[in-house]
Length: 86
Image (tube, rainbow, N blue to C red; front, top):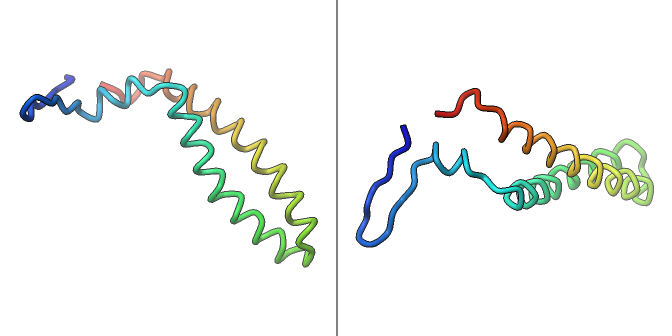
């Protein structure tokens, strides 16, 4: 059941309603922010493994783009799945 609480003149939507109505742009922003964190990790691990910052930067750049695209589609698919939503 979707619930709302009235607070003054504002309406606060429950989590279940907001999760069910997530827009694609939100998935893009989440993908970018997560990829920044993930890419920094990949950069550091690659640098440690190769000992070369240029190689590590190349690996991290490719990783950033490919995983962001995969994450976007992963999010959109899960947003369409009704399992676990009310």
